[in-house]
Figure 1 (spheres, one colour):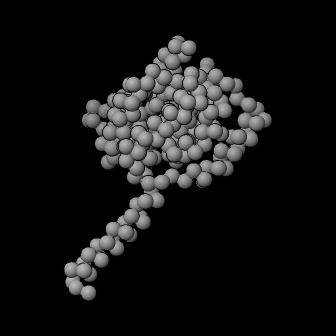
Figure 2 (cartoon, rainbow, N blue to C red):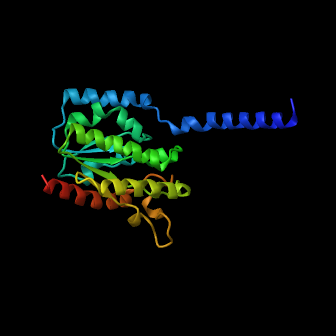
Figure 3 (cartoon, helix red, strand yellow):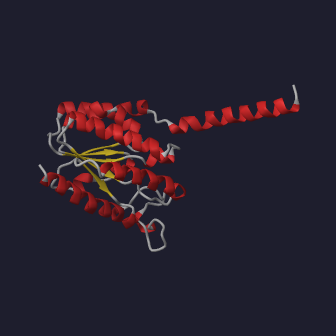
Length: 229
């Protein structure tokens, strides 16, 4: 074997190995959430949530949001499961989204998607799948997408995060049943970086002050959506 052929072979092997390392990060694993989803399904069977309420669904920023506390008049349904990606929610639409027939859905996904190596285009594609299913199955339901937050931990990914946000915002602008909660600017300090006081020590999850920002913005959009009924 010539030196050139050997070099090419080594290069190809290196590429193959890199793909093996990167590819798993690009994919979620909906199956790992089955236990969590099953518990919700069992609870719903015993005590069915009322329909036409507001549903919050998404990753840990939803799970850790005490929606009963911040939205006491709404009596919202919270179906946040930490670490989830858009495709995880898509996998369980029939269990934790569609049965509730909510009047408004507030969704926060994309954070872990970008953090896991997915492209902004992939996040947009999954958003379109999500909202497409909602509009098809629940044609009167409004959907509010909370922009992927600019966090300290994932500041190195902010360009991709903002690209995904921009594309989703442009898609939402064409849809009268969807709204975009732009939480980016209020979470940025005078130095142009995420405000440290809004985050826990992990630099990713929020404290009360962060959720106050989210609550104020989302409440206005929920009120606007409800006024259109």
